[in-house]
Every structure is written in structure tokens, then in C-alpha cells.
Image (cartoon, helix red, strand yellow):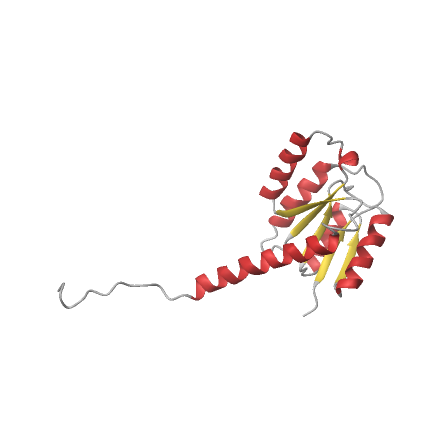
Length: 168
């Protein structure tokens, strides 16, 4: 089965870099540029993972990119009861976000992880080390491991203790 990503990003340069990474990894992808479009696509499709810009507008026609829009979108995705929650990777440009202090970034990261984000990568993406490709692969490995452990625990028969004949 081919992996499929939902990419929520409004910067054409970043979209181009993501598209190159998707093609290189052999993943299919859909690109949207707003909170509204993301909710619509999520309701229509199943995704293997989501790449989510930290500051997105509410609609593609108008709106200011805001961190709060991203947090609201995370909450809406988590509330989709009929959908399996895919792993979510946040893409962040700290200057755009207005978060220059490390403490603010750490608080935001903790808040986003409570709302479903698995990892955060800085934009523009590094070309070596922690590249977008490596972050995606790492998140998919972590998620696959969690799913495997969950499935194994559900398939394990309940353990019962037998009473030995000496104790009876």
C-alpha cells in the first residue's frame, strides 16, 4: 500500500520542497493551504500522515496565518470520530510564528503534542541531518511500532493463574 500525506502549507517554496521529498520517497500527497480545506480533505480521505504548517489561514481566499488556527485544526482532526488519527508533523518557521524565546517554543511544542502532533521540523528544511524525509520516516517508524505493540496487546489472551493440585 502506497503511503499518502495531507500537506497543509501555504508557502509555494516550501510546497515545492515537500513535493520533491514526496516524489523521492514514493508517497502520494494532497496539498491544501487552509484550515477549511484541510478539514474537508480529512473528511473525504484517509491519510498515512499529515504535514501541518504552524501558521495557516482559516480559508484560502482570505485570512491571516496564525498559530491558533493550527491548534484549532489539530483539535478538529482529533475530534473526527470516524477517522483513524494519522501521525502529525508540525512545520515551523519560528520567525513567522513570532517565537524567538526557547521557552515559548517549548511551551508551544508541549501544547501541540497534547493535541496530537508527534514531531516538529523547522522551515526552511535542513538539507542534511534532520531533513524532512528523515523526520517523516522516523515518525512513521514510531507510529508503526506503537500500532504493532497495541495490536499485540489486544491479541494476547488474558492470563489466568492456575491453582496447583498441592494448593487445593
